[in-house]
Length: 308
View (cartoon, rainbow, N blue to C red):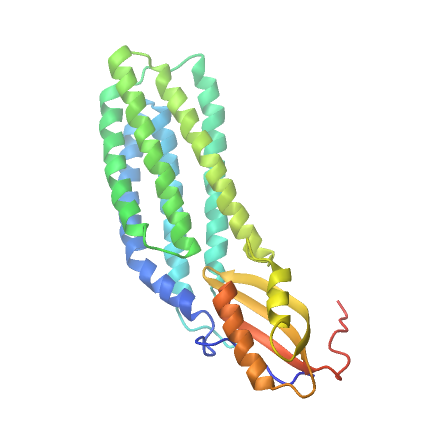
């Protein structure tokens, strides 16, 4: 049917080399963040149950989702970097996206529980001691700041999801400390319930954003902000190109956009030149480094007929 194809300049024929490098670089920070999260959760849950602090309990539940999310992220990075069977033509890089979605769902569950529990406590707040809550809140803040530093250089969706988790929990730790200070200063134990509610409200929009990003990838929508009409026009501006059709652009995983298209050219056009220029245009103007282009002479018929 076609006269040629291309996988993109500088990409070779290795699927997801950029994603593989990104995942490998994220492995060590994720492992350290996981260990810190586990230690923080263990301390927080014990003190939360002992003091009946909703703020601390909500924060510890959020830390648990951090731990689960980072653990899944680490597992996804390890598995995705291993050789796969030939029939898995794109490897296992989508595990990263599934992990991000699962993490978002976990965070939403924690937020909804905290909202219900917090509203119930406003009218009859338990007697929460401020000092142990303050100490554990400070411990959580310190470990979160370390984890944020470790994860700040990651560019993958896994690293971004883990970083958002830890960022939200950092704000949660600050809230826990503020609530504890209010209790110590004024004796208003209801402050603990208000802080728990505030943490829950903080979690919701960030969870929804992460879930939306993951679902966009899973339904193979075009990358956010990419103008397909502009991509098509840029390809059609190449010398010798008559028309571009059957254009598809989607995200396989973080930093890995994929494009396929049929490029119709004049019968006397230089197919090799068209392919080389198209690769350069897609990479430079649109950041697409993995493109499969089917080049068709303009007198060829049938390639624009689809049965689905």
